[in-house]
Amino acid sequence: MVGIVLASHGDLSVGIRQTASMVFGDQPDVVAVSLQPSMGPDDLRVQIEEQVATLSDQEQVLFLVDLWGGTPFNQINGLLDGHPTWAAVTGMNLPMVITAYTLRMNPEATAHEIATGLIGESRDGVRVKPESLEPAGAPAAAAAAAPAVPTGAIPPGTVLGDGHIKIAHCRVDTRLLHGQVATTWTKQVSPDRIIVVSDGVAHDELRKTMIVQAAPPGVKVHVIPIQKMIDVAHDPRFGTTKVMLLFENPQDVLTAVEGGVDIKNINLGSMAHSVGKVVVTNAIAMDQHDVDTLEALAARGISFDIRKVPADSPESFDAMMAKAKAELAQQG
Image 1: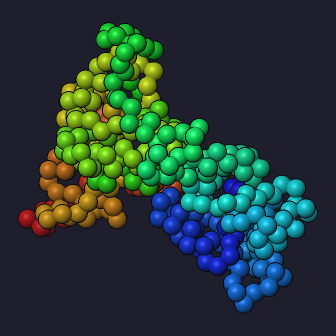
Image 2: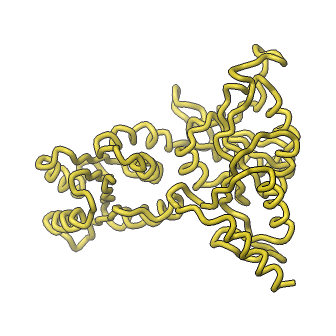
Image 3: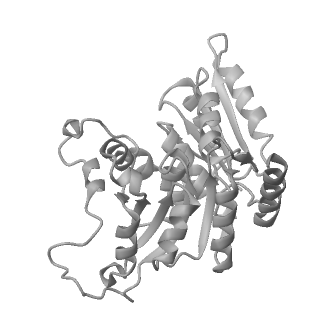
């Protein structure tokens, strides 16, 4: 695995590593070096060399640095000459770090390949609100609000591809679209669009607008009621569409499945605690209704992937259910 060194003036590198861990999960072989006011260039160079020495693979090292021409970059640049397999990218920001984590999940990836893949994603992460401030020629964030159903040139009844929408990922998450979904899961799944399926949110213009505006670069986001999702699942015009579905709770998933939405696997990411629920993992709380619903989904042959981010190890569905039943029985 490519080792990553985050380097900056002050504590930016330390802070961005901590923030990236909140979004992507804790990562091995990621270190941070920081130039403090009391340090000279030689002191920083020693710190960099010491941190690189802690990495598992010291032949493949990627440096993400705050400023081109600053002391951290200059010290790292001096080290690159003797290490042709190393690479450095400046302009470090959170999208850049998240993308680097995602790209290095490929065990064959090199530091040079990851560096090449970072540029576009990192630039796309810079957006402005209101959109009218975007420079001419920049991609408009408003494009994420395109309608969920094809219109105009594609008449009803037209069959595209095999006529069946492709569900690349289905996730239950009380928070719906947020950082972990917009970055880690989207990069892992690479959907054409994200569809939030919720009767409540679809009729709440404020929440709907906030979710659409949280769309990751290059991915359209739609918020639709459950029945609309059922209609889309039966519409042959979506035969070439690859989607990620987001649900607030398992009950909405069951309603969609009963309506004919072909979901084969559910990622349980987050189910918030409320009165009457018991905590069964660090991100999932359940009541009896949840237990019954998940069992009904499992009875239909649907499998479960219980983890917040791709880097986490999946938890056991059976163990989670057993714990929920035991604690609910004790509570009752």
